[in-house]
Image (cartoon, rainbow, N blue to C red; front, side, top):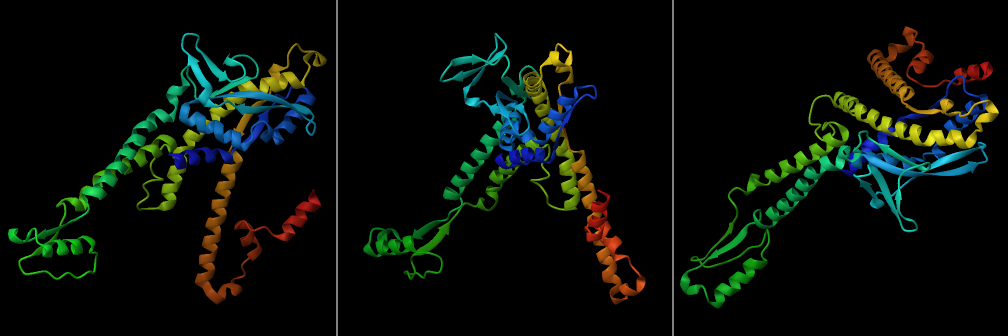
Length: 362
């Protein structure tokens, strides 16, 4: 569960932070929002983002507080997100309101400025948490492991069996033989009389009986992967094209990542950015009663990253094809008249002369 959850959460790291501002917004608001965009890690540090996403995925919601801190380097108040511990939260169904418990202030309703919540949607977001769907595979995997351990301890081990005549059952000779057989291991040699039989007794069906537990564990692992990643291809790569399997895995999981991204954007745009706008700008200076209509909106964009991934694949494909061609022609490659600099560029290899040209232009 932990590995699949981390895989899903870490997929968010490739998204770029953008703050979208209306063209008609005041110039100072545009400038400060651009500075905040470049320093958005101060609002949402990476460790806090990971914690938020983990709770969103597992429980469907995440309550947080905002701490206003003036940042003298970017000349503005920055609302820092502080996640509230889920161990001190409950929901009042009658009031349809969340409450948190604080040692200093007792029970506090989650309302008003300073409070916020990331949710997966609906009025009961906890029903969307993966923890409910993961309960069955979690308990079944534990049951399978316990059953497998019991099987290994009882069913899969052979018993040492000594058969002697009834008259010799209580003799010292039989006791000595018993002690030797008891401590014997693979490779040991025992000598006994011709009326004594020593053998190993084991379960007739033990060779394949453990597959019941193995299949149950595989089902649990596949179910965990499906719940958290949207597929079980990561767990079950057995043949065919690995690249095709990996690409299919990424495409299926992208829908889930988009959903997680939307939940993160909605929470920040609803609770964080309006407060940032209020505390950093005085409306009447701009001839307005409020500047909320110019409030920046967070957009987690992955378009550039996707383009870079496609470009990287194109570079690799060209480099592989070019290397195969050079190897096939051997020493005749110098007689063909190949533009190696252009080949290097198409393989994604930077050239010094290209950098000098860019520097001159800039």
